Length: 63
Image (tube, helix red, strand yellow):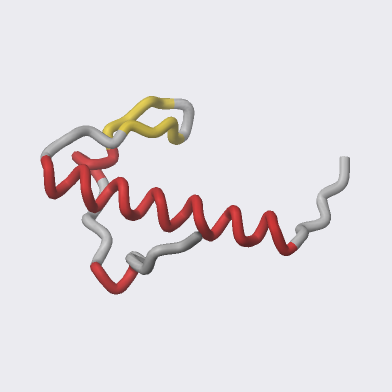
């Protein structure tokens, strides 16, 4: 298995992190669950994790 990171995979990782922060922010604002699998358990991170600050979230449109 090739474990070398490629530029595209770095961009994908960054995009997924941003999407996760946006989902958590939105879930907290709307009071909706944000379900993830963490440490062998299914949890609602909207209930357990702190809300990301606006500075942590990139809101510009990407294409």
